[in-house]
Structure formats: structure tokens, C-alpha cells
Image 1 (tube, rainbow, N blue to C red):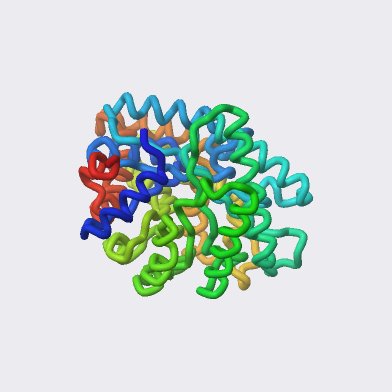
Image 2 (spheres, rainbow, N blue to C red):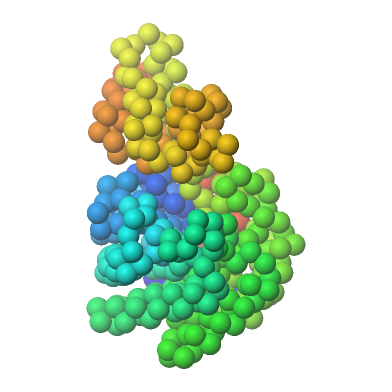
Length: 402
């Protein structure tokens, strides 16, 4: 299987010939999403990336309950189930200090040590790409981003560590992604972006790591947590800067983007989608729950179990706006509560009470719907298909393999 860097080079070459493609990176925040994405890769004969954060998948299981080895094994099972011959690439998303919620109270030394152990686990499991993102620094006052020199130094340090570990384990080359568009310290203007690129070039060269130059640079292209309009002009400017270096721009926060067809047109190399597929999974389950109620069947209690688990997790608090700080969940507006449950559902799909309620829901509908699980996976796959079509990925395996 060719590496992600090879795919990027092929996209650059084909763009010069008038062929425009953007790779899709699905965040595997549930088993149903993972299954739907593997199914989409198989049915469209396209490569698929899977961008997993350390909150989702890590040595401790993350909120999906999976270690990197577990995720690799499960992806393999699904590839066999769906007869998928297209390459499937596991990728670490946002690998940086303090980017795992459980690391919030750790010192710099502690979070870096934990992160490096996780990088080693990802490499050993066979991840194809590592996103190195040291743009959070909890030693600084809240809201203050680290200096670009700090970001560069830690980026090079972590790539150097990963390369040393890869060589120690006798593993083939891996690809890298760097940068972020996050408000906590991203590459938010062209001057900073250019400084970052120049500093990364010199930093990697000084360590003899020019071979580890990243294939993806994450940049701000208009979308964020609350904005769904992609900015083609910004994307083109960034593309012109990184394509001569052998890299492409990767977009995060692609969820619900209004104009996904503009991504390949502007040279975007990849795009991450995650929360949107969680919302699709939830919508499908709530449709089943409503059907259960309409039929007057024994209540599964699914909606209440999910809501209770999201509230009990406490993770919804990190999505509060400044005007909502200090408020209890029930003090938020109904619309905001619904948004919090939809966004936070991915954190609790493996909660025992949620799993039990979901099983009861499926059981209560089996004489009306042959396979409720397939109904949910199908809905997610339909949504994934929207991006596959917009990104020109159908039947792309052969031409991207080169």
C-alpha cells in the first residue's frame, strides 16, 4: 500500500493535468461511523483516511474504548466484511501536548512524555500519518497562544522522536501533518504561516529530517466550529505556498460545509469530518426512537439514557460560550441543550447505559425493521457519500496509486 505522501504527490501531479481531487479524512468517533466509512471506501473504490484523536483512541482506550491496535484490527475486520480493496489509512489527529482532555492538569514534561508514549503506540499499530500539533501551552495564561518559535521547536522535537521510534522498531516510512487552524494558536495569517514554513524547513534540515517533511499543512480556510463556509480564495493562496514544497493544505472543521465541491477546485489536499457524522448517527437513532414510540412498544429509554450520559460526562462544558459559563446544563436554552447532546453524543456511545438502551431500541423494532443497525450505518454512509462525490473520489484508487 502506498503512503499518504505518495497520494499527495499524485494529487499535485494530476492537478497540473486538470484532475482535481481532495482526500476525505473521517474521524472514527464510533464503530458505526468507522463501518460506514469502510463501506463507502469499498463501494466507491477510493482511498479513505481515518483521523483519530487521542481523546477517541489511545493506550487507555479513549472514549471509543479502542487502543490503536484495536482500531487497526477492527478496520481490518470491516475491510474483509465489505470486500474493501481500497487502501485505508489510520491517522493520528491533533497529536500535541494538552490536546487530550485527560492531560489538562499535567505539567509540560508529563504531557510530552504521555504524548510520546502514544506516538510510539500509534507507530507500532501501523498508523500511516501523524498530525503533530503543539499549539496548546497550558503554562501560559488562558487564551494566550505560544510563540511561533515554541510551536516550531516542539513540532521538530516530536517529529524527531517519531522518526527515531520508527527506525528503532524497523517500520516503514510514515507521513506527517503539521499546523492547525484552531483559535488557540493556529497559523492564522499569511505572515505567520510563511514564518512557520520557513522555520520548519530549517528546523528539520538541522536535525537531518528533510525526508520527514509533512505532506499536509493545516491552514485556516474559512471554516471553524461555528462557521460552515469554505473560503476558496484563502485556500488558493495557501496552496500556492505549499504545493512547491511537495505539500497540500488540509482543512479541519469541514463538518456541514456549505460548498464542499470547492475543495478540489482550489487544490485542497484533504479535509476532516467528524461531528457531522456523529449528528447523522444520532438523527438516525432518534428516528428509530420516535418510531418505537409511535408503535407503542416497550420503551427503550434511549433518548433519556443518551442525554443523561452526555450531562454526566461533563464534556459538554467545554463547548459553552462565554455567556454560558457557570450555567448548569438545564439552565441552557433548549436549542443549546439539543446541540450539546448532538455534539457530545460521540463521547458516550460506549457508555454501558447508552449501549443497553440502544440494544433495547433495536430489539423493539426488529419485527418492523429487519436490521436497525444497518439502517443507522446506511444513513451515515449516505452522508459520507456527499463528500466522496464533492471531492471527486469515486473510482480514484487506481489513478491515485499511480
